[in-house]
Image (cartoon, rainbow, N blue to C red):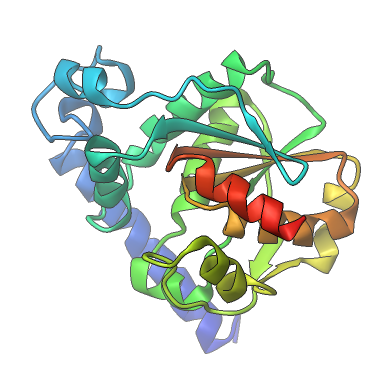
Length: 249
């Protein structure tokens, strides 16, 4: 046999996933609909957003925050419009939205002085546990990261593994989140050389208290990177993350 039953099943799954993505693009061309409200737009609109949604997105222009030695950036503050984009992307199957989120992130990184084709920079998506992957069918952070890497001509690598499936973090406070996710990330041994002396850019769709980002950084630091930063599409106010940082210190 050419492969185990699990390998064959995985190939079939990804084959079906690719076909579904192509069909979705034909039926719902991503540049014809606003990724937030769904209204018809033309292909000239920035980030596939209609004028109304573009004006109401709570774009974040704050300086990046240094949280526990990690540079953290978010592209927008979390609100109704940002929530609509994230939910359409993660839960309604509109995976094409990842491309527009990646473009938003790329522009944010350029504003902060990050350069394209930086050979020392590595895009690292926040990992998703395999059980959640099977339910959702994709890792939203990896999909964004793939397009972000393409936008900025950077390398992307899955160097992290989520070794424990954690309960949903939604609704939990900062301390509860930190306790729940503790010990859930590991740096893949074969990836240690990829991480060493690199500027790591973690990518996630949402930033709340920073518990997930801290756990990712803890795991990555075993590979002795030069620096660790994180960019998220949207996030809540910094208050909870900074409070938790002070508690950890």
